[in-house]
Length: 221
Ligand SMILES: Nc1ncnc2c1ncn2[C@@H]1O[C@H](COP(=O)(O)OP(=O)(O)O)[C@@H](O)[C@H]1O
Ligand SMILES: Nc1ccn([C@@H]2O[C@H](COP(=O)(O)OP(=O)(O)O)[C@@H](O)[C@H]2O)c(=O)n1
Ligand SMILES: [Mg+2]
Image 1 (cartoon, rainbow, N blue to C red):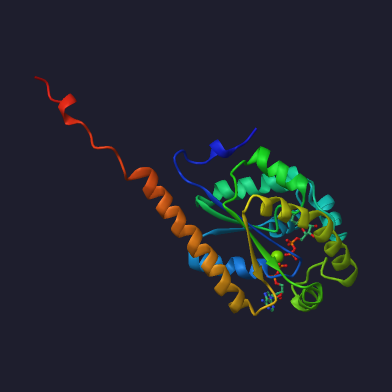
Image 2 (cartoon, rainbow, N blue to C red):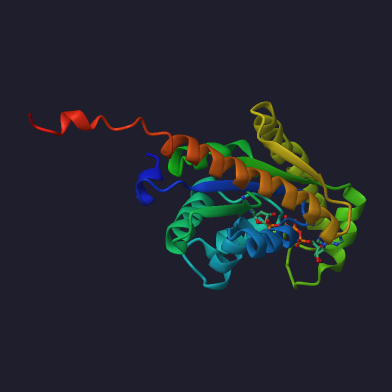
């Protein structure tokens, strides 16, 4: 059952999915969006790495799957996302590295159920992705040539169809991720400025044009 009702009633929750190949700059752009637009950044990969580090129930299984470049079962990642969303107390979320396949998307829909406002798709050629990952130097177990190849395959076979799904709904905003991080952010900034401006207008539309109260009904003859 959807947990959308677990959020404070009457509060508009804004969710943006951030999708792109491994090394496309999802985390980099999310940090900038957080600073400029007050979103909470939820990185699916970081949440899973925390599970591995704290040696939780599924830690060993998650570690093995990540090392293989494979995807972790959707209910695990969706529950981690939901917990982080509720704990944050914020109403704006960037969900980075998710959904990565149809199963992720469906599990999110049935467990969290808050429709994303849009999907930011950071597009970047494979050679550039590979170059960046091999220079990332964050000590990640999966940033090696063999696992990178498998992660690219998963991205191509499983994640791109999800981008297409949202594109058909008119929700995808594509940016050219091959530019410098600051240049990409100029494009990202325009997308978020437009999103938040449109939301203000639609809220005004909902809440402001009250019909005038007919006071005559209040005055007793
Ligand atoms: N536009 C960019 N140009 C060059 N390097 C970048 C750019 N964006 C990010 N990077 C670098 O590439 C690596 C991968 O970026 P990251 O944000 O971790 O990507 P992702 O989260 O999509 O895997 C990092 O070392 C980061 O500093
Ligand atoms: N929705 C997700 C996101 C990440 N993951 C796992 O976490 C790994 C790293 O994801 P990440 O988002 O941190 O990787 P980058 O794209 O940032 O390089 C993936 O290769 C998967 O093994 C997952 O199983 N399901
Ligand atoms: Mg990342």
